[in-house]
Length: 255
Image 1 (tube, rainbow, N blue to C red):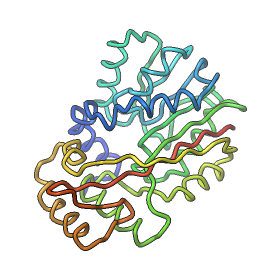
Image 2: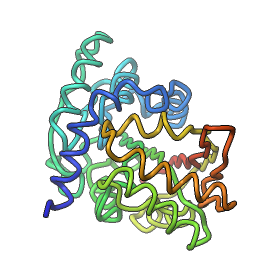
Image 3: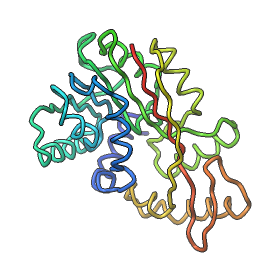
């Protein structure tokens, strides 16, 4: 059996092209939220943890002194390097590695960002401890991820659906647990923003780039929606389309 680290690499090697091109993933509004939350810290040395295709790295590099784009998957780092090159960003370096054991010195960065990553971390608290370590005192940490329902039965069902879609998914946390983990790592939360992002099933499934997963999961979520089970994600039918939402939390914190 694959260990989790290899599973993540396999999934995002296959998804690199579709993930990088997805309008839901490259959402400019989300990137702007990050820039605003960073404030003056966006002008310093910034670490982008689990950078994926470099969406944040390329945007932050426009104002930052330097950016390190850090990811577990080489194919994603290639996409990040391509995006940054096309944007004319010469101040970004690319490092491969595991977020739970980062190869950086203590207090090396003025700011750390991460987006759409926590639900793939096997040990999110360990990652937050590492982020705290590599961030300078007074530095900024901005994190955004999709969160699950605060109702445990709904959260379990939504996470089961997510794992069937992408086996590298570990667990979407309820917003309250995400905030608690950030505080538990030693950060002071300065702001928390929540919003719902409408999604459509077929668009969402295209990102994982594995057609064999679509029909069985479509059957499951259609049956749930027909039975009135929202799964904490607002599952509903709109004619032949299956619609739902992802709830996002963006936390701006300080060490």
